[in-house]
Image (cartoon, rainbow, N blue to C red; front, top):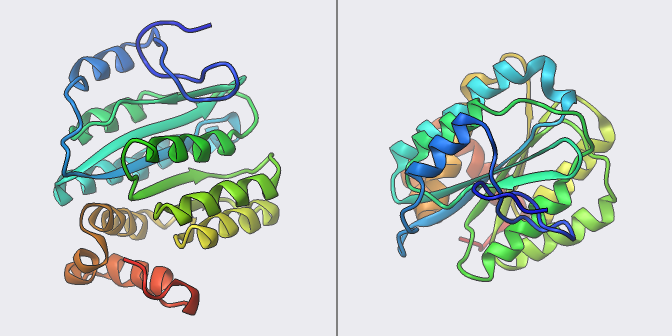
Length: 245
């Protein structure tokens, strides 16, 4: 049943709108009402907030918050936050240029038990493409409890539409890694592993993804830092990825 306010899932697994009782989300919504500027690049930042991530959640939130700082520096980028947790709970923010509001919202999220809902995230990105192209999707998680063939199909659909998916894996589960790599490959994105000492590298990579989403390959090549170089190697180094902007 729909509540009012913050977006959540609709019947049938789609991502829709509802209200959270948390002060963080209420405050966020108040600052997120302005329309998405027509010329901005668009990036979805998606999180697995299920209980398996609780042991490292505080550290992960600090690392993930660097994404929104990078977005603010990149400029010209509209961002949407999507996260799932609990029993079928999947929420999406409005599209906003105010990345600080999204960062504050993310750091207010707590983990809740439940299974992964990666398919909902990918389906949501495909749906958003119907109104305007989504340039990139960043997903951070540590598990995969869904049909990998279905996830592969959804990732391929995003790739056809020009939406690259960048998967960041926490932990070393082999089935999760295999699927995360496939999602990245089929969308011409990239896969990376999150480790206890990867905060600086992740910040650089997230900054590079923000640059790519706002300006494409040319902007990424012009950026020229370590994160941009690594991202270019992952995205364009393979034969199958050449030629796409």
